[in-house]
Image (cartoon, rainbow, N blue to C red):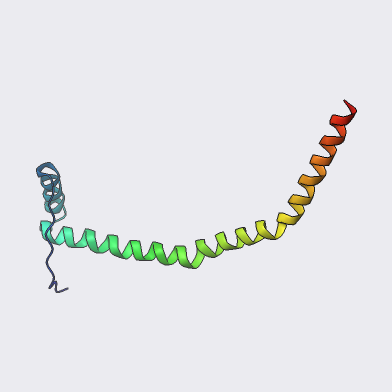
Length: 92
């Protein structure tokens, strides 16, 4: 795959040494490993964002809708408990 863009990344010396060692162990140049790591991160980030948009956000929206739809029942129950509590207080 042709690479025609260049970026400059600054690393601490110890991190660069570790990264260089990793690249050598994988039979790659440090530049090729850097390209692979950044490319993988971009693809994974895009996939995660798409997953969130397609699956997680609709589930969250459905949960919010269920809670909102059920809220009148919860408020009615809360009023009942408050009334009951007030009646018990009056008896004590």
